[in-house]
Length: 279
Image 1 (tube, helix red, strand yellow):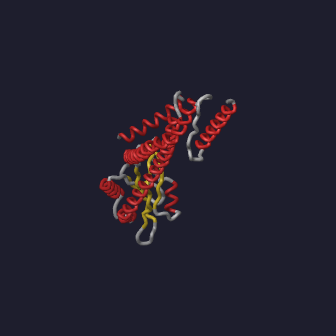
Image 2 (spheres, one colour):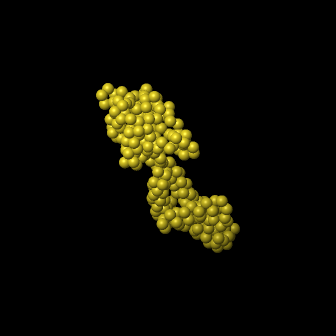
Image 3 (tube, one colour):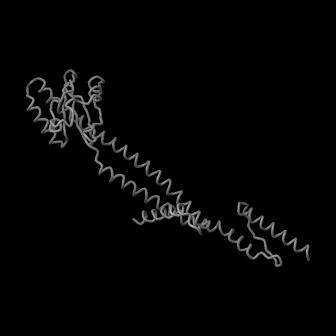
């Protein structure tokens, strides 16, 4: 958008002035340069901090979503696992039921026994190829079996591929005995995260650009007011004459410019007294 283009142009201009140190940069240009940098640097810092915060909050949102989904799914698997442990259904029937449920929810499902060994999975190819250990990860296994933890999020890796898995203990409705452990692996949606980050960054750029343009307009007006007495002093110094009449500058403020004008008027007064003594 034009806002982003203008802002980027201002940043590039400021950086170019700093790096090359081009001659001819007057006081007004320096003030504008520092004004641009005062917006660019905080914008970059805020952008980095905001994008990092968005990244972390997005991961927490994904973990919470899949953790809740695994917890809700565990209610449906307890009866099925209970039937398997009672030998009411065999391993193939249990595995087929797991595959059907995984297809229905469009997510992989792994079910482990209480000793940590894999009972059934909707993605047996990964385990058959040896890409993933048939034993459950030690962390969530200990937390659920010995730590009375209901759910556990665990980071895992297959080769160079990182993923997460939500673990839930499957406990009997009758006495709370641990029947097995459900694992639901999932991946972060990088495309969705990048879209969110891009949207936030564009909004941030637009806001900073609007503020920058408004500040630039009012800043030029303020700079013009501040530089007017300095230009007046420069003009008076050019026409200051040892023989002619030199008029003092009227300036009521007692700021730094006022002190400079006071010194100029004091110099003019001494010059006029000196000329009077030599007449």
